[in-house]
Length: 306
Image (cartoon, rainbow, N blue to C red):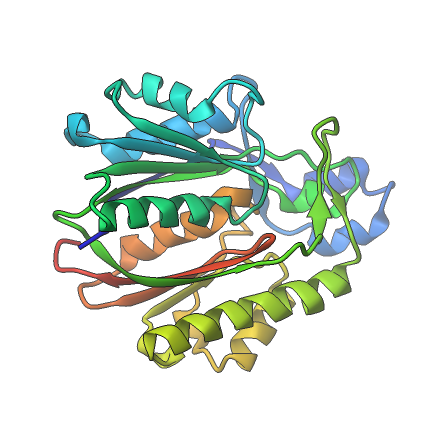
C-alpha cells in the first residue's frame, strides 16, 4: 500500500508582525489595516525556497536509511534556477543515490500536491520503492499590497513508500482550470492579483467544493467520514462560508496557520497536512485539498504506525 512513511517541515525562525508592515507601508494602501493581525514567517538573507525545501527534507528523513530513496520531487513557484534542476540540487544536498528519478514541479500553487500525487502513484504502481517530495515557497509581495501581508515563507516534505506507512493513500480527484486569480511572469518579482470578490466566489467558492464533491462521489464517502479536512484558502470569511456550504463540522477543519506563518504557496496545504498528522490517531481519515490552477483532493487513512 502506498502512503506517507515520514513527514517534516521547516519554517524560518524570523517573524514579521503585520502591524509593523502596516505602520511602515500602510500609507500606500490604508485598507491593508484589515489584514494587520498576527505575524508571518520570513526567510533569512541566506535562505531561499531551495534551502527551505532541503531543511524540510532533512526534518522528514531524520535517521532513516536514504539508500532506498529512488525519487526526489521538488515543488515551488520560486525556485532559484530556471535552467538547472533544483530537485537535483536537493538530492545532492541530501546525499541521495545517483540512480534517482528527479523532477521539478512548478507553475501553480497546487504543484505541491501534484508532486505528492505523482510520488504516490509511482510507488503505488511499483515503479519506485520510495520517493521524497519537498515543497516550499518564498514569494515577495509588492510593497503596500495585500500580498505583502498574506505571504509567508516555509516548506514541507514527505517520504512516500509502501512499507511502514503512517497514512495510507486511498484515492484522489483532480481539477485543472486556467483560473487566473493571480499570476507572475518570468521577468517580474511580484504577483499581480485580480479582484478579491471574484477570486473568492469564482475561485475558492467554486473549485474547492467541486473537488471535494468529486472525491466524495468517487470514493463513495460522506464529508462526515473525515476526521480532518484541509483546504487551502487565505480568506477567513470564505473558509467559514465553504465549511457551512459543505456542512463540515468547524472542529474538523484544519487550522490554516495564517496568523503565525502566512500563506506559503505550494507548501501551504502540505504544511497543514503535517500539522494534521501530528495530531492524528489511527483510523482517522484526512481529506487534503490544494488550490491553484484547479485543485487536487487527496484522501488518506491514518494507520497504527502513526
